[in-house]
Length: 616
Image 1 (cartoon, rainbow, N blue to C red):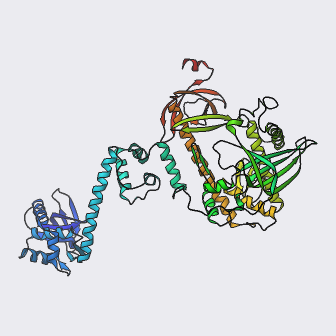
Image 2 (image 1 turned 60 degrees about the horizontal axis):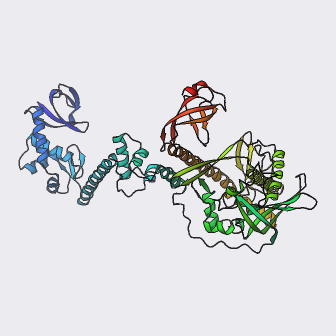
Image 3 (image 1 turned 180 degrees about the vertical axis):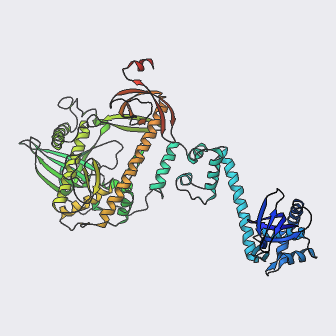
């Protein structure tokens, strides 16, 4: 005796070896014995052998049409044996009944299982919907398969999806992502590499930029339509003319300076800061824009400004105009000691926008006290003396040997121009900004006014709504206030300082939730912007190495396995570097530059001056 039964959702046949009321032992064609429950048995038959039975039953199953069965079944629940009898027009043989049962079981769209051997036809509308779903899935599978083939052959599919979003903010339920995932599995490539190979981005720089923009500017970098910046109320005109010092590409000119020499010696120095707080009211559309962006983003070859261009142009300290400014005046004695200070809100005439590119050759360590005459020579050299005194008084670490770099990018060609930190120009600007920020920070503290302070102790720098010492700069209080066109915290602090100047209620009170949130968001965002800048600087350093065909270069050991390549702001990590003291000059062989992952292989080739280098 043989039985046709169900086990683990599959139909099987076997020879009965023993049987009780509740169960039986059966042996399959392979000789395997199993214990099955009696209620799992649907049919008993004496012949043919199980393998021949299943072959014939499968043939009956395949000949049956699910749509025809559904139409013949009516609407009520039925037993498969009774249905098989109606279908064949006679009492079905076991092989026939088994074929019908398997067809019913394998047609869940057409028939709902209601119990042992019992089914109910699906409603017409449900069957229609299920068929449409199957057809849709078949089309989707074909679409995915087509896209996978294109990706695998280096062709970017026309799938109407942003490649950056697909990489960095994917919806894993979408067909493009499923195709990309399948193609990565097939090719063994990472998704970024695969899309790059398919030309998803005009160049690798665009990919790195797209990742950043997707995270921090998901709606794009364009500004919404805004009302024209309104002019501040009539301001008194300053009695001085000022000049600024910036790079040629700078459009957000936040600061300018004036010097009035006194007959008895010394001078009255003005530090003039652009004053957008006059026209950007808290909670306004412009304020919301600045609060969202929090800072201008700088990177080689470009920037993303915090404020719209017409707002910047309205408040920037552009030459030839009277510009609203928050001015800090300092009466300086001949020995460069500060005798008196005063903060004013006024309109300052900006006489000149001096640019580093022109000024560097005129005002530097070699020309101070000598050399030919140039505009503002007396003022700049006197300010350099003041700046040197301020720096010494702060007791801050000397950074004169630190190196900065400017990136000049034009039509894909990059120049990386070293610039020593601590030059006279840098020192003058930096010390006057530190002076203004520390002075106004102390003023806020003195008046018990909350602001956003930049504190540093034990080497850790943090933003806070309460003042604290900044050990690195050597000042008691420090509140960023000198770049309100570029940093939102400076704009906030400028509002608080204006309330003191104008003797009005401050915008932000003690324990302001707004300030706490701004501090948290600014720190996170500012760090992310700085990280993006470092990533693109690394990218362009690698591009420069390729551009100049550099395969060997000197470097300086930082520590352990880290070294900084000479002439570039590029740190490399290499396991081949032996244990050497910091600042040891070494030489590397370079290879395998990877612009996608921003990596390269640096192989230690010897210590500069050692015999190993000569033979390398």
